[in-house]
Structure formats: C-alpha cells, structure tokens
Amino acid sequence: MRRILLSQLLVEDWASPRDRVIALVECRAVAIDRGGARSKRPSIPDPSPFAGEPAMKPQSRAPRPLRAIAAPRGLTPAPRQVQSLRPVQSGEAYRIASPPVRGLVTHELAQALETVFARFASERGFTSGKPIEIHLSRGFKPGAEGHDEGRAADIVAVGEQGLQQWKEAWEQAIAASEKSTDSQRRTEAVAEEKKRNLGYGLYKALQDLGGWRVNSGGWSMYRGVMQLFGPWTDTEGPWRRMQIEHPSQYQRQRLTDQQWVLRSHQDHIHVAK
Ligand SMILES: [Zn+2]
Image (cartoon, rainbow, N blue to C red):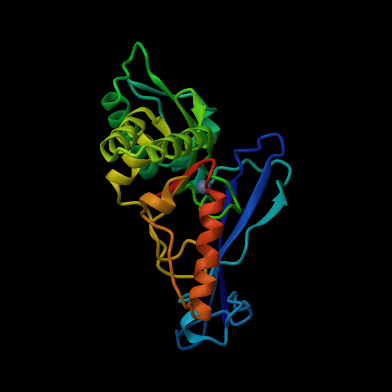
C-alpha cells in the first residue's frame, strides 16, 4: 500500500480585499511507503538552472509555487496562518501612517520592528506630541519573495519623505562633502548628514538591532545573507557589494543575484525575521 499525504494551508490575501483571493499553498507532499520510509515526491522539477554544477544545486527542494484560486462560495476562511499575523503598531514617539493591512506580519517581526522604531524615534528627539511617521508598503503577501509567510516587511517612507528621496539627499551631501579639500570638513559634513538623514538613521537602527532572517537553504536570491536590504546595503552592509576579480560561474551568478537585490531595494527597506 502506498499513501500520499498532502499538507495544505489556506491563507487569505489581505492586501487586496476586493479580490478576495484565497491562495492555496501546497506546503509539501510526502510519500509514505509501506515500510514507513519517507521519500520526497520525485515529480518536483529541480529549480536550479545550474543543475550540472554541484556547488550550485539547492540544498533542499523549494515548496511548489503558490497557486491562487477563487474562494469557494460560502467558505469562511479562518486560516491559522493569517490569525497569527498582526499589523505593526504605532508607538509613543512614532506613528505607522500606512494602512494596517500593509504592515501585517508575524508577531515576532512586528515586535522587533516596534522595538527599533521606538528606540530610533526617541533617540531622534520625537515625542508623543510630535511623533515621527513611518510608512510600510508591504507585509504579508502570497507569492511575493520573502513575504509569503508574513515574515518580511517593506518600509517605504520615514519622516517627511520616502527612502528614495532620503538616499538622493544622502548622495548629494556626500558628493558636496567630497568637493572640500579640508579632510576635517569632509568628515564633519558626513557626520552632519548621518545625523540629519532619517532614512539612513532608520536603516542603521535596523542594522544595529540585527538578528534578521537568513535563509540557509534553497536556491534563492536571498540565501545565506541577512535579510536587511535597502538603499545603503551596498556600502553599509550587512551584504556589502561584492568585488571579485576573476569570478567563477557560481560567483558570477551570485554577483548577478546581489546586483538584483541591491537594485530592487533603492526605494524601500526590506527586513525579515
Ligand atoms: Zn520586501
């Protein structure tokens, strides 16, 4: 006798309530043989485009991609996964100005973000009477890399402007400081911008807390690196821009991965727990 167990999970896409899309996630399928020996289902294709190179093969098979289906009539979704998520809350000296649905994440991530936001806001002199505004653009989102379990959040604006504007202001300030021939002047100008630039400040506050998610297995852009990506990642870390003089095929792919990650996070900060 041979039995197939299908582990399935229903999650609701809260980010688009009008569509009421239910994503049916096939977590994994496990075949159980008569002797009790477990084997992975052989029909899942190898996701690695470099299957011939052992070092580049994924360490574990990725779950099958999300499949969105229309919600059956009369079905009230009460999935455990969704109930364990909550929006990131405002604090005393900071206010989450984006809709709660955009900050729907796991309790653990919400708590970590609230800790950073509270510390950052009070260090920058904001108060309950004059809180700083923070905008999140995405929390839980089925099918989105890193967001499909509610373990990742995107921060798109802090204070009076977006992360992209903060980064542009930063680059202008650094370029202006480099024109000075006085090295002390240059150092002071950079220090001044670090104090003034709230986008940079928030990024560094998130980096200082640390402990963000690292995916160790699977073939993914994000594997093996701490998931804190934003406009300052290439110079400030944690995943500084790699410089490899004569890259192997594997390293070339990794450089391409990093380039994509850095380019995709110029207008927001992505952080996962
Ligand atoms: Zn993200």
